[in-house]
Image (cartoon, rainbow, N blue to C red; front, side):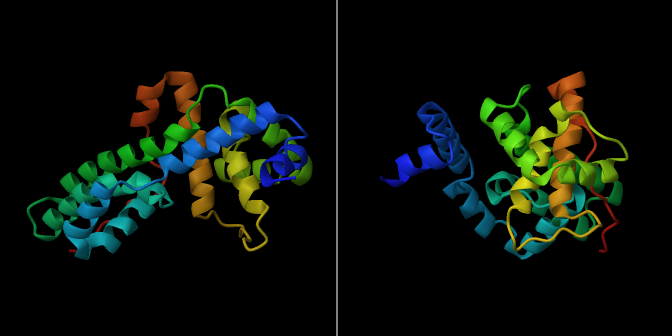
Length: 216
């Protein structure tokens, strides 16, 4: 029995159609995480000395650092903003506003994967399976940070995000929120606004991280 048939039998209970759908989804996700050569070239040539500062800025404002395929296309402009700010040609207020709006674009691209009105059936089935193993651990953790229990239609994909990490023995989540939690919370807040007010409102919604003043 080859790997394909073993996966169909052991993971999908013999359901070949479910396997094919999940397999195609995995291929699509893998392709979406491929970094374009033009973005790599720009990243290497446009103000490379500001790479770490740009990463820090994105992570500070989002609370986490997205995959490079998401953030790289937007990094050169953020570096230019940082350069202008450090040179004194851009005020603190102007820099804060411009960087905020640009990082929202990064957030919105990252959230595209989590913006289906109704999560695909295989996500719902995975959630039921994982919830049976881990119970309400993920939901309770996120509720403690939110201050309320979100509706499942808003939190299902975020809880799956945490469930996936809980399956890895190498990761131990502390009581304080981590980058993992900030991404999960971002998914929830984005979906809350998306499903109640629409995509334009979700795309314009506030970011969850902090924005401390920069030193010149």
